[in-house]
Image (cartoon, rainbow, N blue to C red):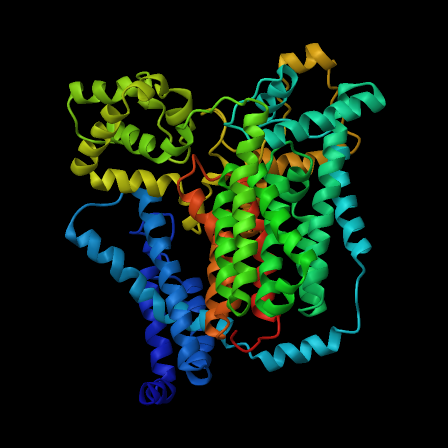
Length: 600
């Protein structure tokens, strides 16, 4: 290894030039455009860009450790591979068959890795001593919790003024209707339905209108989110340089999707705040497991955070189970106490939501959510595979003869709107026999269907999250901002009167929510993409392993768990990815700027 390092240093200029040339040939296959184009193969600007890249690559080869270079190359290989797959699907709408395409699919990332890996190595080479010097220069300045809280409350309050009394959509119509009727379905978390209805009832009781009820929910959620994000920023402030804390604070305060979701009736908003709290609790556990497990307050906070996540979203299991695993792995020194807290948390998280459902006699909801990927795969087979008319009708019979509504990035038309769930309940084995038959015949189509459905998570250039929801006629729907109010609410509590007291800001938020105008802004558009945060999550995880901080890397497990659940969800939209998009900036700051500790 030492001899290889010396060889790279000695010939750094030559290797930097070769890396740029290799990237020039790989680049056309890594962008969502025609791979036969001349991007980076010719032209004055492309030549200047490649020559400019030679200098930092040469510096990396001369100065960075072999460990940093290898970690950089590992990250670059994953990034380049999925860029290539995403480009292939975007341009051809399929994975190209044939051995030549298979070889190119793996050769192109390898060609891009020398240049990208050397550039990425800068992220792993930052010295802890340099970070501590920055920390020392800013540690005297502290911002109180109240300042963070008020900043977030004011910013989210501006969104409320723009869309007063809030944004009522997504699952709201089903949840509030269940509350009014007193008849619940377990498909939607009963706790959130009760919380929503109770806050509406409180607002109506205090102020005498359903508009006030909607405002009461919005205000409650604004205050809750502001408090949770303020806790995260205070936690950061004690561990990272002040400019880093301010950067994360600015993201929470100013990125429009935070304000929109803070006043939306979706359960994902409160779930997201809890996810951020859970991650910083696990970081505190990694810092000092003895102190964490000895504190009754911290133990109760951990259990309550996990329980509320379980009550708010069914996929909360993908967060609190990894959190309990983290607890057991990091808390080995106090094994009995860690096991006791883990057991209590799992019993509460698995038992209390079921008990609440039993208490209100909630009927079991359909299991169509678990069928998202299989339905996509069968529908794509019907529409894209070379099958007979009889086979086409056999598949279509399961989808009310509407597989033509197959949409690569959204499973809802297949698994909810048109899927014959009643027949599935009667004949589940018939469905799975059909599924297995076509899986064996068309594995490539099945892989394509899976990749297209979750492209918003793994493809850095994907923009499906900005137009994957609502009717096929809508070009862009980043987040819903129109109100969907069921008749039963109007008949029971009266009309909800929507008013904008801040129309200029409403126009700004609407341009983001419905027209995805941010996609026209280079670099800034990345901050609105779920996939960008996934790669930051990967970078944070690798950084911690590079620093020998495996016990801290474990604190990221809940975020990775949510990522895993989203791979099999109906689509990748912002409200689903919101926990990742909020937790990752906090954990990225901790991974890169928090003082390292000796391995636990």
